[in-house]
Image (cartoon, rainbow, N blue to C red; front, side, top):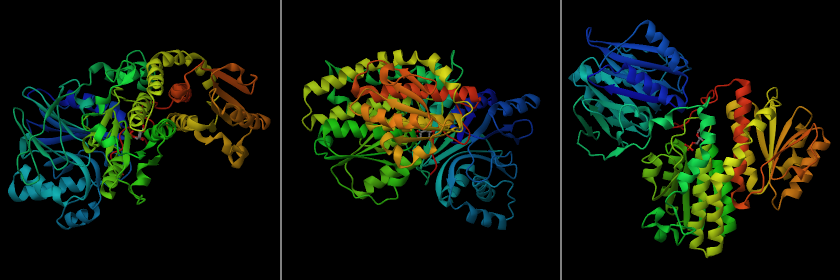
Length: 611
Ligand code: G6P
């Protein structure tokens, strides 16, 4: 999704803006641009490109900019195709430059009014109305801050914006409503960005703006106000993102690095949460026991990969806690008018904590009268974390690859922790808890072992490179892992992949099976393995090519059409977490062969801040 970076300093900000743009690339984008104020001419100068930040860099090498104030943007198209004209910043009458993340729903009405005032539109975007509208008010009172404050109430929708003007050469203005924005504090310099990751090289001192906030940044001073101009105070945080989490190191892609970081990410997520083989009850805060004790059901809400984590958790919660657990895609939940129960715990799952649908679904659940809310999230201070009663952070570290890997497995770890905490109120025995904890503690080691399959999976991947379609099968708690495996493959290799519970094979997908269709089976040694084996025989009998991930190679006789990838003996409770890993590797290796943009797959975004 769109990324914003802005800086006002006593040094040249162009390298800071360019580095910030590179650090925002992971969010997903299709064009990029920047605007600065040229001190000699007192004019705004801008450069925009369709495509990658690298191309913007090349353009700037040929015609360098330098300035002590500027704003820049990576755009993910919503209104208007990816093009130079639609890329941000948008500039009104050479005076006001704006970058924007979000969607202005009433932009057409505003555009018509502004056109009547004589403003000429050069793009198809909703953003351009903001630039012209600010210019319109600026002409009347010659004060940028008042012009922004007059404009914001006219905008319906969601926004994070950064604004600069040649009429106010020593100030940058930022505002947010529904889309994320942070301020970075330096010495004699201040910054604006969509997330703290963009500011890692320049400052760790971060302030998260809240909805309705307007920040005015000068070199030695900043102020945050509400829409009426009343001063508001927001706490300063020290960002935990270290520079090394933002570098690829020896890995070709962030996704590969992040797959291999999973043992450490899981160990860090468990750190400080276990004592004497039991989960520490204090980890959810002092009010947790009172909020969890009356709970009789769980409703999980999430999108994408996070939704798949929720589907796995349903099996754990219903098996170990013995209360019903419902799991729904946030964009469906928010419009379904679900039946609310004040004793149902709302659990939101989100790596970014900014997914618009998940946030809206949480607000809807609150409005309808559901019970307390708990967020499992990777970004402290994200909107979701702030809107929830209880929080369980995944400590995965920054995840840059758009296709989620370590955020997913650490979500699963947190969901198992939650299962224990809920189970305590519903009579879970100490033995069962200790068994779950022991399994959790063994995870980093088990994943290390499975990561050694990378070379074997690389060979396997060659058989996928010319395929158009793939079918993933699983049963029980491993069915959501099949879903996640299919999602990973389609996200980054662009091969059409679908997942089915293997028992459904006969009810449709078997018609697709022939020698050109690879079928990937998640086949651990559990109670459903025999049934799954019968399903796999059905595929084999129809000439399908089978790739079976199993505990032991003896599951089926290997042949040209049957390949078994052996994962070794695993503790059943954590088996879905471990089985996710080879499927991530498979998707990665296939994408590598296909030469796709692994970390930033086409049309996708890391943080989906629009509906
Ligand atoms: C996007 C990302 C996915 C992610 C989904 C939900 O589609 O590309 O990796 O699973 O959003 O995001 P969330 O931040 O809420 O987990």
